[in-house]
Image (cartoon, rainbow, N blue to C red; front, side, top):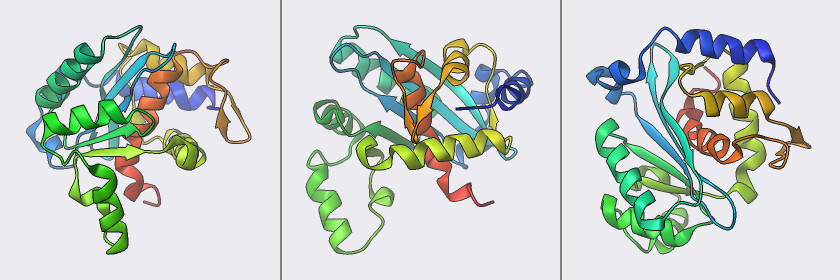
Length: 208
């Protein structure tokens, strides 16, 4: 899916910043800190990635996944990260509505988000602007998200500190067939999905 050189460049750029020091940069907050969440269901893991935009680079501030997680534990972890990094937008896999509703209640979004989205679509308004927790359908958007993630890496717009070894491994092992991720062949595919979700915050920048 990704060229080795592109991944190496992202890691080289990532070695130039400390995630904890970068997270304390108040100027970065104004450019939008984003979180991607791939909630666990079935036998999958729970992936979370937090990013920020600094000097035209999307920096990874946090990237991890949890095996056999407890629902409430993951809700607490998510909220702790939101407060720690002052996250402004959360992109989450739409396939887990129960977790979405719980997270929205914690954040202060409306719980009846389906009705809210339908209303804004009817009014032809950008519903992303009216909520913090944004459900994303992989069934609908997986090809576009994969292409966006590939383009950002190729254009050297991503910086990944070496401490995020799971994310780096997922990029090195990512295999796609017909623009769909092969989850069986990709290591840490849940953290990879969370990474793709977080990058959606920077779609406005893809032609820049």
